[in-house]
Amino acid sequence: NAGVTQTPKFRILKIGQSMTLQCTQDMNHNYMYWYRQDPGMGLKLIYYSVGAGITDKGEVPNGYNVSRSTTEDFPLRLELAAPSQTSVYFCASSYTSGTSGQETQYFGPGTRLLVL
Amino acid sequence: DQQVKQNSPSLSVQEGRISILNCDYTNSMFDYFLWYKKYPAEGPTFLISISSIKDKNEDGRFTVFLNKSAKHLSLHIVPSQPGDSAVYFCAARGGTSYGKLTFGQGTILTVHP
Image (cartoon, rainbow over all chains, first blue to last red; front, side):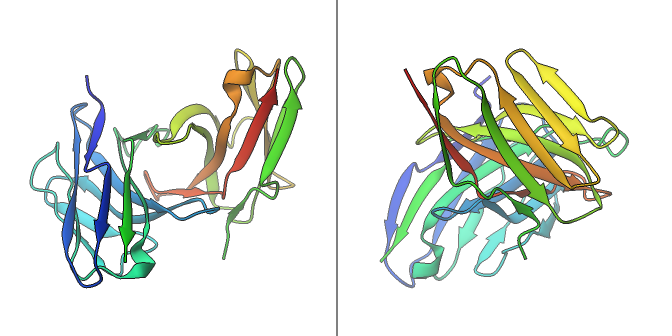
């Protein structure tokens, strides 16, 4: 199993450009998440998905969009890049059951994004 | 509003000694707590967790203690090894917010040989 994979590893964007961060998991997890980590800060949840076709906002969703057409893929879209979106982005997945609630999230290696 | 706080940005420990990383939380609805470890240029990896119905969970060299009345948890690493040098994040999940974790800012642990 490759686990959670993310592409690209690093990208430089100009202000106003758009891009899609890719995330794929091969563990058949139902839940997937996007986080951002700013220097000296913890991870903040951007969006999450509880299954194909279902997404919801996290703590910091402004400036981002997501879609979940398959169980495996959960791309994150930046439409108009801004310097405030300079960060490291992590995708994660978990198998989450409503009755257990004690799931573990597995993280990808991250995408480092610089907006200039 | 920082609901999960790790007030020590860094901790330096000698190899073989105990490392104690601390975490405080404010939301009384949190019922499940996790510690993640992160090396540079990698994603966080799960280390250990504890449910709010317990006050201690142990896994090899790693033990997590939970004090619900003080809204405080700690991670003990005994004995510390140089390979433990990493950033440690405390995370919490609350009530019916399945899967949604709130993370602390992280503590950089350095274990000196």
